[in-house]
Image (cartoon, rainbow, N blue to C red; front, top):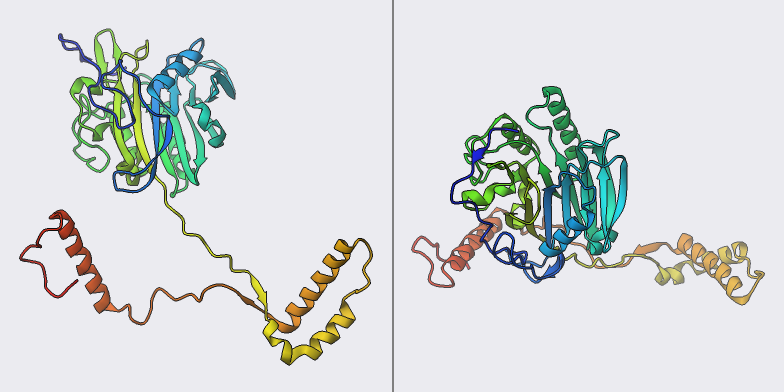
Amino acid sequence: MDSCKRKKANGVNGSTEVSVGGVAPGGGGGRPAGPPLSLVSETPSGQTGIKLRVGTLNVGTMTGKGMEVVGLMERRKVGVLCVQEVRWKGNEARAMGDGYKMFYAGEASGRNGVGVVVESSLVESVVGVERVSSRLMMVKLCWNGIFVNVVSAYAPQTGLGKEEKEEFWEEWDGLMGKIEKGERLVIGADLNGHVGRERADFEEVHGGWGFGTRNEEGRSILEAAVVHELVVVNTWFKRREGQLVTFSRQGCETQIDYMLVRKDQRKECVNCKVVRDEWQGQHSLVVLDMIVKVVKRRKVRNEGEVIKWFSMSKKEGELREKLLTEVEWRSRGTVEEAWGTVAECVRRCAREVLGVTRKGRCKVEKESWWWGDEVQEAVKKKRVLYREWRKNKGGRLGESTEKGVV
């Protein structure tokens, strides 16, 4: 393990921030309100969304700790939990109790191992599992047409060889490349690196609220985030230094457990924090609260084919001849069977002779004749004025506002 920062003499308290996800103030006390997955009326941008809490925790081992993990998720209302150092053999799924289910990837030696634990109400939402190695796996969930890919990762420790670390990041790149651009991505990981408090050279992925000093492994984390357009969510929420610590051992403290999402998802993240004193181990639980926007899809009118019966007067003779020669009017079977056979033949003949048309409204091209440069410029000015009006809460616009534009 890397060099750690010595714990201050006055100790470190739990988080005192109030979580949007419903967790009561304080690192260990209080009971959260609300289910792990619920529909909320508005997102931060004013749209309807689904509230989801995802967490990550290095458990040390899952042997004998199944119900302890379930209890932790119930207390903290975690819908999906990424776990590391499972130390189970094989690649399987296992029931955890109370309807919770764990998907995991291990190795024959019983070392390492990662997993994803899913809350009972979300188990049926699992539509796919991708096991890359005992250090990397992904579970895909889908509800209300929204796909969320949850990745659990466990990077090699600092003391291990360079080849093993490079192999891990190659597997990481391969997995990231398989995820569709339009789908959500949430990564919970013990990456065994320090991204540090400074964000120099990585302003797009580092929010400036890290812990300690960046090391080489931390640089690898940030470089991987840049390549795949991710952000380290832990660093985007202002916290006291003690509330950033995720790993503590023998008086040494550091930050090596992270939550990452895609850049375009950052606005959906309403809170990310470390929950201290909830797990009897060296690592602390990290939780991320998200409000995933639900896009209301416009109803598409069914545009089926319609026979041109109005052409009957012009082609009546041709249609009569075709019906007499091709339709078997004396069909065998029940009345329903005979009618079905004859009706289908009549429709087929009518389509061939009279032709078909598609029902539905007439579509108008987006690039209409009136959508010229002048109109586009006017619309652009209108947007600018509207934003200024909203900023001034409906008051008078500034002197720089151009007149004559509504």
